[in-house]
Image (cartoon, rainbow over all chains, first blue to last red):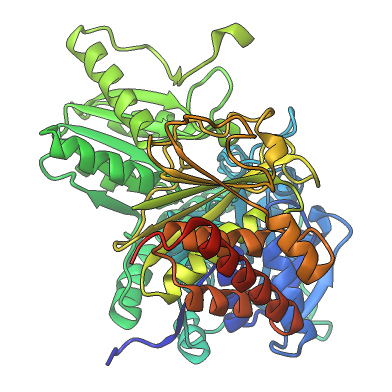
Length: 399
Length: 189
């Protein structure tokens, strides 16, 4: 009946669904080091390799730094590669990720978002991945298990494009996506492989034809190298849009391109957010709409490249924009909030509210979102908009 | 939407209970979602844990814990003193507690909730010779709740635990369901 290449529709854990999808893509090299809550992904891939279901080279590294370095090596040899990590593990990969972006090597990472220590906490926020934002890494944040699966199908095609050649990360919230069970459609291996295409880089390391990656570059050329990373990431925006559209045609699912709009057209108030909380916000928007409030939601799917034009266009008609941030740059406000604000400068756009919320797994319910909207509306009507970001539901007694 | 909250201790299979209920609901043609809360040291055996399951006719978008459950499963009566188990529970909602004692004996004389107790540990000990209580609790809960399909639950258990483990768990569930029918009567058509 369906023209789409459905393999099966099952209810399964997010991590297993993602591992099955990576298995279908069969990267040549998988370099891993375990950390909660990412562990189920690499455990399942280990099972697939051990059972002979896939033909990847699975390498247990001695740290996340080594795991990422294994991807660097594989990508420089022209081999498709994969890893997954969380929290401190991602920080330990950071040095390598800057190197991959700078030398234009497109390894793919799943980031299962988790708070950074200290204090030690295994629950979700976005501080880990957002801290990698300046590296040149492509970052797409997903809302649910199906979007996690579909984005992994799309990501290699984007990252390995000759006009891109950058590392890429699919960011999925810890537990509520990685360890949750939801109905999910998995796709046929051949269709997934065909969609991803093949990794065919312009250069490969080869003992018969030696070349150097990451050679010393002085001030006469280095700005140009950095500029080219910036340009490549800017070019990626179109590739993400094209991949999302092509995926919709061939697989039937669409989760947004660089952004997803939800009731933004006539909205006076637009909430901006990323990741799993978007699902809860959609529910809150429906409830507020039922009460006659003109509220909408702008989901940021691609945080890097930053969808500046879409943000400006979609927020321009609103009176208020409320950014719900699950990370912050100490003393400088929410990270998403700051970037949205920067892009609205000189735009005569909405008044901006920035809430830092949902840190280290602190729950955000529909009523939390409605409370945030109510609080913002009150401040707006009294003309007492906070100067900076507000930490939502701060327990003053603990300070 | 049916919102089930499960309280137990690390190692009692509370997370698996939520998953099995969600898998069974999916096999029964519904939308469902299950996830754990592992804050508060929930990765450790014996620590209080919570797991959540939502079942609906429509796709489920909510990505937050269940604060106003309409069903409660309590795998360990020892938690009654430790955890605010009934927080947010809607009045009149069924509560299933694993205990050989009567609700009255546990202090639920005129509760605003429908509190039921069930000796799941005893059933589990008969089947497994170990206190693996969760599938026995599922059997009793299915009878109590009336809208969960035992066949779908059996298929969910088979899928998650192939072979002899699954067969024993199905046995525990069915044994518990039979006992629950005797104790609670047939709850719904």
